[in-house]
Length: 500
Image (cartoon, rainbow, N blue to C red):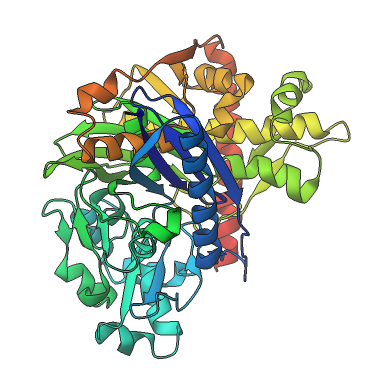
């Protein structure tokens, strides 16, 4: 019999990737395809769901074909996805009624501000673990139902279906037979109760969202149906689902309380396992579901930053000062030592712990000597310093990790990884497999298909590639953070003026 391969669909914000892994966690096939970003107005971000679907089918077929050519037999599919992004479609035709509204989108800022003014924020946070912010799905759903002609009446009649991207893909892959999500994605909607582990009727009433459009919530490793054979070339069971950041935590084997990972992709997301306890942050971090297996929840505390790798993409695509993201490592290393250029990369507002949807990006401290090297370092440093703010918030909540596991495309950059260690004053561990989101999806698929017996089987697959130890003096670290926080204060002050 040929060895089994686990197929991971990693549907991200700027591209879709499909990978095949053997049971030891080694990649045996990979394919990736970018798709367009749509910016209809300031702070608005959309995707064409059909472009997402096309990219997923293309890459999944390619990865399956490559795995088979190497002698592997595809055994099951796991899906990881950009989380809070919203799609609503017609149940009969499967056609979306509007573009996907992306997690970065800020169009519902006024709606969120009204919820806060009405005093609903404390109850929402108590039920969901989330703060009130356009980041999350509920106000996006409400916007589509209110703005698309006839949508609300069709939703109430049961003619429409809502899903985060995982749900949309499951629906399409199974030919409309399965309308389901997992607990991690549900926990990012502002409609999911962390204690009951189900949709919350009070929240559905508050956001005016009909229960009829919502998917069934399942464990992360479960039966999510079987793909139509004509879509991927064969019928495959979908047995694992998780939001991308929770999938990355699973890929990083963050299974014990205190285990923490930080993923650096389009945005940055630090997630620390808190076990069976819902950690209630006093410092504007998020309580969320880490995973749910066999009906038992494990929780996490999370800090979310909207811009990480996207700042480097901006240097490349909009400014044209670099040709490839990988250039930033060498450029940052040779930037002038006395350069004090600071980039606050708030292109779509600021996430945790500031939560300032009206904030916009700014660069401080430029001189005539500032060039691409200094801008590259400032972009990387902006991501590092945002991470420091997250960890300070965690510390104020009583969470002090001893080490950090990192992953995502940015972390292949040694300068960036070392800077994280220096500024956080922590050991930073980079695994051999940087694509931990896809790996986590594959591991969940393996659990759901019975190819792994437990999380301990998955734990054995994690391997260290390189450890970075802090080498910066306290004086330099504190000076850098003082400069950074002064710049953040300036950005927030300007945002306050614009909001008047």
